[in-house]
Length: 60
Image 1 (tube, rainbow, N blue to C red):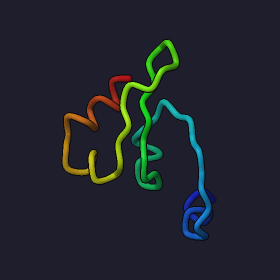
Image 2 (cartoon, one colour; image 1 turned 180 degrees about the vertical axis):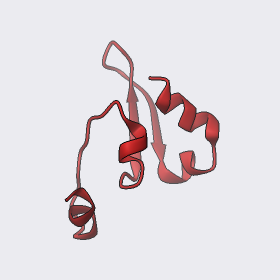
Image 3 (cartoon, rainbow, N blue to C red; image 1 turned 120 degrees about the vertical axis):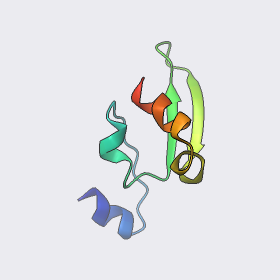
């Protein structure tokens, strides 16, 4: 369903602790601290070719 919404040009906001599940459909990722402040903001081009950035998503 999310992929269909994306294909239709809809903006989708997802909150998840499971980056590997949402990675195929998201274009931008914001990382939040335990204090609920933004600690990182990444476009798909930022994380696709940088394993260190992807690892930071998985360790949150």
